[in-house]
Amino acid sequence: MEKRDLVIIGGGSAGMAAAVAAYDKGVHDILILERTEFLGGILNQCIHNGFGLHEFKEELTGPEFFTRFVKQVEERGIEYKLSANVVGVTKDKVVTYFSGEDGCVEVQAKAIVMAAGCYERNAGAIGIPGDRPSGVITAGQAQLYLNAYGYMVGKKVFILGSGDIGLIMARRMTLEGAKVLGVAELMPYSNGLERNIQQCLKDFDIPLYLSHTVTKVIGKGKLEAIEISQVDERMKPIPGTEKRFEVDTLLLSIGLIPNNDLLDKAGIEASKTRGAKVDSRMMTLSAPGIFSAGNVLHVHDLVDYVVAEGRTAGEGAAAYIKGELKPSEEGILTEAGKGIGYVVPAKLDLDAPGDALEVKFRVSRPSKNVYVVYSQGGVPIKKILKLAIIPSEMEIYKLPKNLLKADGGPLTVSLEPKEEK
Amino acid sequence: MAVELTCIVCPRGCHLHVDDDLNVTGNSCPRGAVYGKQEVSNPVRTLTSTVVVEGSGHLWVCPVKTDVAIPKGKLFDAMKEVNAVKAKVPVHIGDVLLKGIAGTEANLIATREILD
Image (cartoon, rainbow over all chains, first blue to last red; front, side):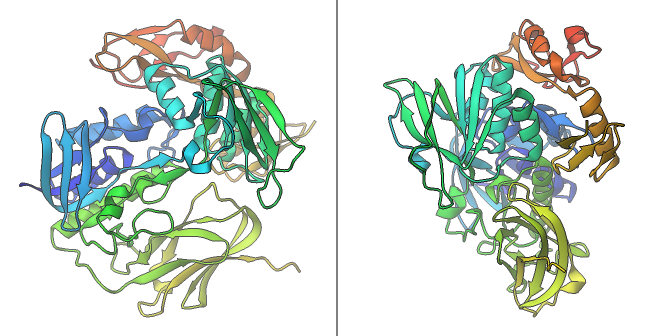
């Protein structure tokens, strides 16, 4: 069996950042396995700008951003294989992949970084009522067709879901000559970043229907029309509120799911995000030496944070390979308290480098004038006032280590309303 | 007339208030003040799109952008010109594919390296 120090699954932003970080920490026997024909991951189709404000202090397009990482990988001579599809990972760190060039190969790794990104929730997942014509596709798939292959998927478009990819596609297809008739969002607030609502919808007078969903798909063979309805507080459509739109395309931007099947099948414990449970170094709790970073762990809004997480995983993997990082039973487990959707990592590791430990989370719903409360063993150790906090923006807080006690019990993040005086 | 708008310089999305004399409040950083003033007096956007690329074995289109932001009202004129541009391999990031797009100072530049 082939042997490698470090195998990285996925050659997108998280995977490349992990490879470069591990290399710079002295681990040079690295193999990146990438399923598609290109390094760069999802940024290959994200031709819009807005990437890199944290990482490079300038605004880049997706391809410009990932090209800088490809150069870092190539400068170091880090080996990568394209069109190499990983089909299996074991807790003993055996990676099985297929490629046209190599056939079926098993590699024994000393450490693994899982960086396989996420996939889109599709029509089947939400069971839209009505016909099943062509013309109903996910926003990311339409983005791939348009930005990588130059094909427009339709001319009269409606978009279900206000996720960022849907908003960006609303602008992109409008600029390419399509008529985007509207965006329907089930929740009473948008799930996209504020800048995208402004730049992609308001700039082009595209209406956003909050608390609305698609209640009927109409078309024999090809999509002819859709019907949307307003929903009540319990998300049930309200009869009599139907609106009909004649469209040839319905884009779905209804959520992203970590592409974590490989670790699931290996029996590695998953968290609420459906990514693996990891510690502060991004090492999985139930399989020492297997790390996880980027959208496969939890879905990010900004690639800059994906890269930072990849780097942490790469540095952790290098330390593990060099025997500097021993799996430990100790550490502080984290919990999502009131108003919090999820917390990453699942365990804070006081031995991790630095004076503070990152706690990342999303709130369950938008709130104003609330405290984010960090409590250990039920005792508040830090309170931070937030004037506004929304689910579409991931929060990152560097929790000073000196506030934490090794034996102080689990850390809970929760929201508390500010007392009105 | 005072204008309320959402800052789009970064993903934070501050709520800006711009008064008649172009004074900006509600911003968290200096870039927000610049944006608020600009957005009310002369809104501009960076245009990103793709152009046909000839001579590549594995890519049909090459992503492009305007090297500086152009007036919002010129986006559709610029798109007409973008759609007539063809690139040839090799393409490097920053290659100028069209100068002075839609009568502006902006150039259309490649944002991807396509060597073969």
